[in-house]
Length: 205
Ligand SMILES: Cc1cc2nc3c(=O)[nH]c(=O)nc-3n(C[C@H](O)[C@H](O)[C@H](O)COP(=O)(O)O)c2cc1C
Image 1 (spheres, rainbow, N blue to C red):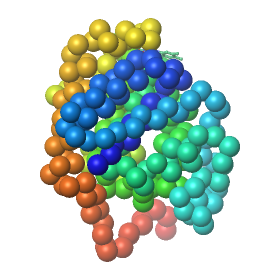
Image 2 (image 1 turned 30 degrees about the vertical axis):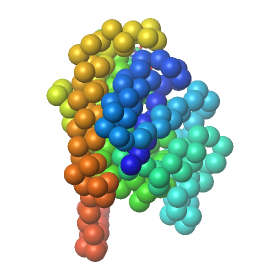
Image 3 (image 1 turned 45 degrees about the vertical axis):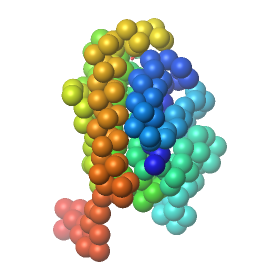
């Protein structure tokens, strides 16, 4: 089994990476493989609601940034962990744009698979960012994996997260719970709605 970890920081090996690396190492001890994918620091487009991805599922129509590269990895992954630095009490905007486009265009490849978010901050806003990162999981039938605390790690300059011993323990516990969930389910995604057709109600009469 394999877990995809998305590093949503412009720093390839900053504090977000440190938190994700601890998760990856703990997963490895449980015999579960992983891949940390960096979103990079090049421009990322926001979703323009063209819905062309509904005509050609699996790909966002914008093919000039990292979004399709990341969502192509959904298929081969059994679970997802998204890590983000906190910017103004929110996740990194580039990461949010990728998540929104990747889920909209390639959602079925990730639906039902266990998911967790991790927020990294200097001092405040981490729980708000954490909540924002968790929102898309609920729309995709993704069982949210928990830890002993909210999945937050503290640090300012790249590297300082290594000093947050409780934060890193929270990452290890999260990895253990994720490994447990994958082993119990055998990596089978949650069934979601199954054959029950969607009943859209847009409150327009
Ligand atoms: C534009 C910007 C906004 C930030 N806003 C916050 C914030 O609201 N709260 C906070 O505690 N830290 C804030 N920070 C600090 C980062 O969250 C912190 O340095 C984090 O460890 C960076 O992670 P990284 O090394 O993975 O990039 C901000 C940093 C930047 C660049």
